[in-house]
Amino acid sequence: MSPISTELTAHLKRGLSPLYVIEGDEGLLVQEMSDELRAATLAAGYTERQVFTVMGAHFDWSQVMSEFQSMGLFADKQLIELRIPSGKPGKEGAQAIEQLVASVESLQTAGADLPDKILLITLPKLDRATKSSAWHQSLESAAPIFVVQNVERASLSNWIAQRLSLQGQRVRQGAEGLETLQFFVACVEGNLLAAHQEVQKLGLLYPSGELSLEQVQQAVMNVSRFDVFKLSEAVLSGQVSRVQRMIDGLEAEGESAVLVHFALTEDMRLLYKIKTALLTGKALPMVLKEYRVWGQKEKLMERIMGHLSIHVLERLLQACHRVDGVVKGLKAPNWPENPWMALQQLAFLCAKSCSLSK
Image (cartoon, rainbow, N blue to C red; front, side, top):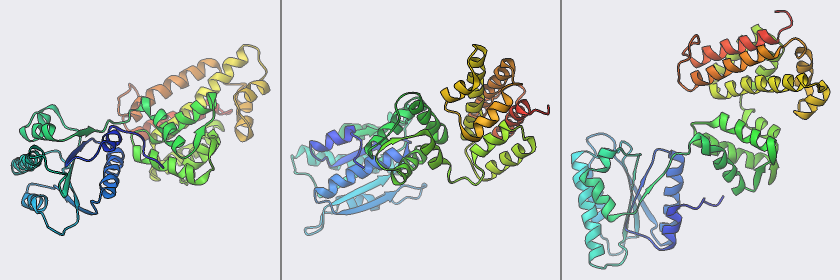
């Protein structure tokens, strides 16, 4: 898979610098950018690599200084990586960084060729006070700083589509494609590494070309013993006791609460759309075909559609909206604060509404 074009890509096309800084909290993207720099330095003959990770107040900064400043006549060129996960190098570290920057600047002032050592410093996203510190200001004066931006939910579907395109895959056009990406986002929201892994899985499971919603659902869900889509079947069947067991099982399996909520909400939204269409005079078989409902779900919806009113479905959708906030860490009146307890209550409400023996 080719790397996605970045500011770093454009910079590297112009040549290497003796010092680089990469900042950001999105581990996958920081890793990919670091890999891109490593590949460029390796191609330029920097065959050795040394990594230092600053952990705690007792880190030995003299090792970094010694390694960076040592110049062996016959030594291989080296990339030195200095990782500061906390973003706080401490007093000694701040002084060491300023000294490292001074060494780089002196070489640049003298017009020297690229040194035998290239230094890469990786940092998390920094607050304004840290960016205003003397050591960070010194980095800004001497090094290109590449800030990795988080991929927010609103941009995640485009990010997934772009990643799929890099391996020759794409979702279908139109409503199904949008639903496929929405499903994918609900499964991996907040975990870009998981999104990356699921994209790679799709590349291994399916050939280049279009991916259907069903293919993506099967690929994402086939690791779960308690299948979220079996939960959907239990809810639509009105099997309250089975719903409780499955919710407990999904939680125990470490399933995503966001994914469970997505599955419940999609079913209630689909029921609402079908009911609305029926109220306009359309025939149920035609509506089910229009919304691509088939198999076991088609039978279940045919069974329950006669006794589910539009007002009940409106209340269920409102409940789904409330629980969406709970799952994302917000409080909702008359709902448990624990996401799984709220999901269980929501699933019970939906199952009872779908049951013929209410």
